[in-house]
Image (cartoon, rainbow, N blue to C red; front, side, top):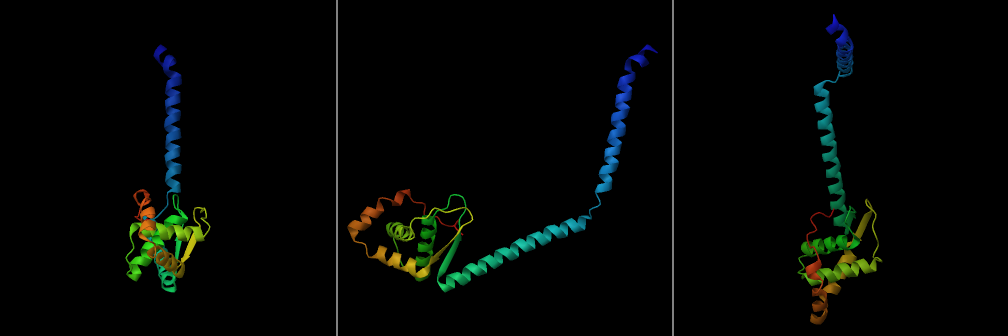
Length: 166
């Protein structure tokens, strides 16, 4: 009897924990009435919706490129200069114009200065007109060898990979 009296509260507490655990399991099972097929369909629908949105954005950008505009959306770390660089490189590739890295730096700088070197907000859209990019590339192409040498100084400090720019 001494043992029962000594451990009575421990037994009562254990029984209470088991009962509460059982109630939680029962209540938890009542709220889980989701059909796994519905969940899969919802995820598939979300994926399809995201793909549709990407396709629409790509189509919109293609239309603007055909019209002579490029629109970029600012993400963390982006700048107007990076967008100008991407536009210059894309223009050179599309037009078949050979530009050196020093000319790219010069052209992107001309574009940035003409725009007033704006600071961008995350999510901000920037549209660069094809004619403005063309003029900047032409201006960079007309630089003298000494002017190009001055621009060449900046080339080692520039990341020319603009594949992340959209």
